[in-house]
Length: 318
Image (cartoon, rainbow, N blue to C red; front, side, top):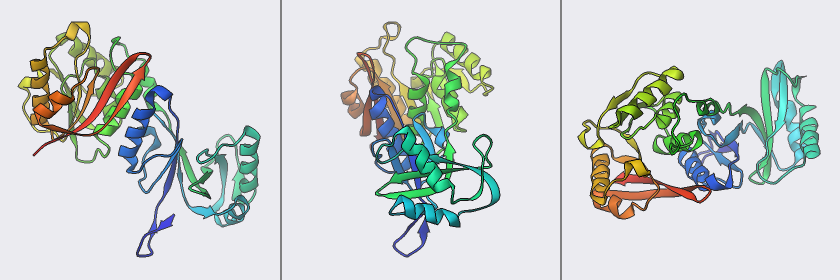
């Protein structure tokens, strides 16, 4: 808990995260979009309270209730954390700096012995977290990510060049960091990888694709996970309506070769449909984005071996 300029208490949350080197740029882009801060190496601190299961990279969220300059001081302050005799487990959350296994367990014991409650390692009523972050020790309620997106790897319909669930989920979060009141569209939804991730986070989204086989596969995947049929057959160039956010995975495989003019038409249609778009492309599209009337606000590259995708955050020019 920090203080604002007028002396009021401001909530603060420490997030731990991990990612593969090939997806580091994506992880950083997603987290700075979701949390509104620039992440550090493996952790971030933000005033925003985010469900850690939103991100495929976040591991823990720790609410800063107590803080101290030293571990001993934090252990003493842990006595003021009254759990009314409830059971608890204390977890060391790795943030700034590294600790060995033995060091982590020692920190947990050092602080945990001062908490007014009953330790329970298996089914605790409260999960507490302790971390060294921002040059001080912090302690408070902790929540683990449930990694719900992992179950979405087992879709009945797969496609070799479809986005991975991690990339799709991160792209959705970049496009729609705050779902409240937002209507989103995936106008080239394919087998529905993006749709599944968006719907699992409660985002109001619809999908369109001109390929009847892809639409059939998307419907099967959505039904498999218990999500509604939000897919129709349509060409992005024929779509009507207005949306708050759009995710466009540009065609790039041998079966979906498009000309430069077709690419431009798709991007112009995207601009017409939404003021904010996340464009995913395996080919350079900056010139086409500019011609279509988009301004690039942020971007990253996701790698898988020698294959690269650009994820580009765009806003409609006035």
